Length: 224
Image 1: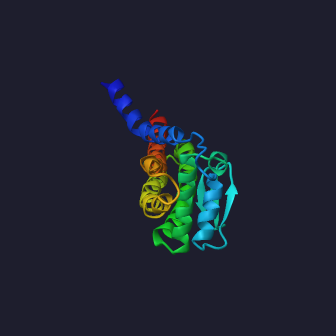
Image 2: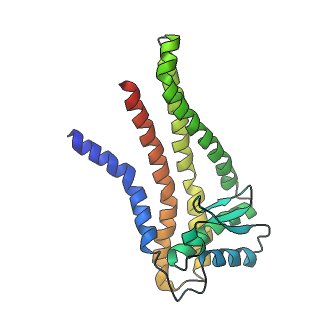
């Protein structure tokens, strides 16, 4: 029974990320019938839509749009790729640039929340590691509980922010990128593009679940 419960939990936490990776790789095969790379499509869309001041850059930090620097940053596979995954992911990140250009409030809120989440997760890790030491030093009956509660809030904030970003991701994918892609890829590729866009959003579900799993791991360690 315990083994089954563990297997079920692992499936819940791991399957979204595995599915997203599988979808993205499935459509990453090079296409000779595509006229340009992901970077070229992103640059073209930005110019066509009149979004000035936003540039497309190569990055090793994963595909993302940086609203502070106003940069669409693409991984090497997307930047130089000529595949359905490459052009779809590029259009998705341009979707965030469109949101920013139009003053889409949830994106601006997400940007602030992400910064908070990153700090909260780091704080959570520090508190978790320091909890036993602080308890020994203070000897307060509720000392350990207070520190653990603070760490739970920190990790929980990170998980919550990842889930809150989902509406922003779905808007960038299906309200911004998908209508644009219809003009640039063949109709028979549209179902695949939808799958890739859904996978882009589900990476945030996976990140949220990873934060929860990380919290659980620390709580198990502290109970020992």
